[in-house]
Image (cartoon, rainbow, N blue to C red; front, side):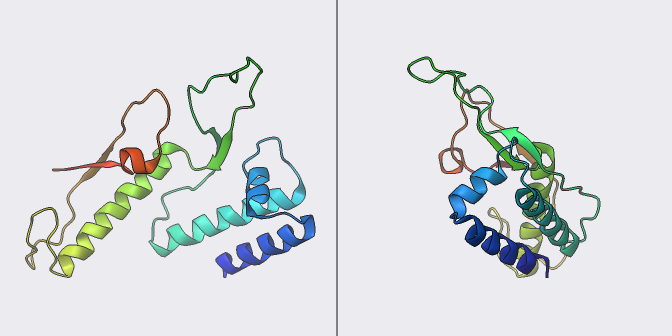
Length: 158
């Protein structure tokens, strides 16, 4: 099991390095970190992503993580004008993440309709199981906000 292998490797890594989750994942997301155990953790993470996408039969999506800045227009200096190290996340590019989220929305709607639940004011009928096209709109903000602040994404049906 890919998830179990990831979990066991991460647990052993934390014990070996006497680190908690925060320190381990700070290293995981650090583009300058090239220790073999962190590289291996990233590889196992990628294998887990692939296994999950394969479970949905989404073999056309390539889950290749990249080091992406947390905030695009973050100040380069702190409050006392010292250079600040930019924070990165090792994750999928926005296009990949948006595609997966859009497909999950379609699946969620389809399953709700199949179960006869109302979706956005619609009442499901047996012939109404084909998902509608979903697009994700991004809001443009000067600084990134939390998901709770802006919602995870906006949905447009049509």
